Image 1: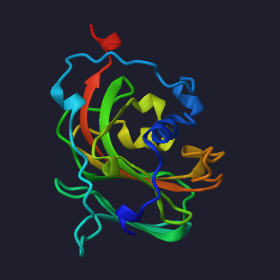
Image 2: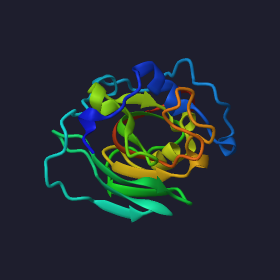
Image 3: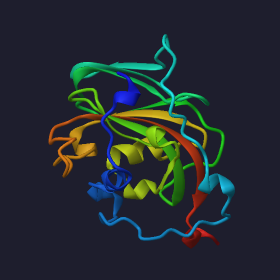
Length: 206
């Protein structure tokens, strides 16, 4: 699958996509925080680059998994290229699985973190990308408690600098699908992401 031929959402649609369908066990509602105060603001939180080049030919997968149907092979992004995500469609899974492709060494991610993330999302039904910050060239800033449950599971406990892959059940993604129809009810989806930076919510500062 070539990333440059992926079907992408607009920036606005992508923002809605990531915060749709929060799980009921997080104790939060579905509303996106209208603003987020960041302690110790730094240039890193406002910058960072998601490389938009395709991975080189011959890139070897760092993780392979067989689903209930189909299969998945992924490799994380590098300093010069985005991730490799190869799906044998239709890929469906009965259990959400998170794989750390490369550990991070920075701050640990919690629900109180504001995180800069480079990511690409692929639909298991057809193997097509539906959203990619790598295509946009810069990270998205978000909170783990304001994204879909499977994405939250991929973030929590990781450290800044980590590359992570997650393949998630429909229940941990978008159980009713998305308004634009790019994800349908019953679709298992894949995200491969890199945590670029993180800061704590100012409300938790002592």
